[in-house]
Image (cartoon, rainbow, N blue to C red; front, side):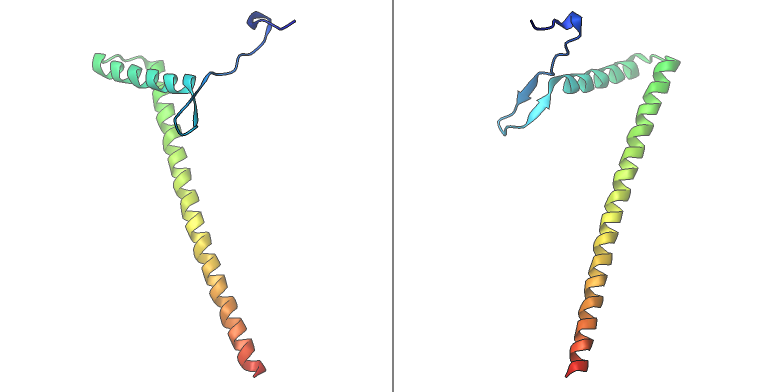
Length: 103
C-alpha cells in the first residue's frame, strides 16, 4: 500500500524538458518570477515593511558575496595557470641545462 501525501510521502518536483533535453525545476523558476514581481510591486507602491527590507537586504548581500567568491575563484584559477606555466618553463630550462652538461 502506498503512502499518501498526508502520511509523509514527499512528491518529486515536476520537471520540464527543453528541446535540448535540459531539465528545469518548475517551482524554482516560478519562485524567482514571484520574487521579482513582488520586488517590482513593492518599489512601485512604495511599501516599507522593515522585516521585508531586512530580508531583501540580506538576499542582496548573499548574492554580492557569492559573486565576489566566484571572482576570487577565477583569479586563483588564473594564478594557478600562470604558476603552472612558470613551472613548465623552469623544468624545460633545467632539462636543457642537463642536456648541455651531458654533451
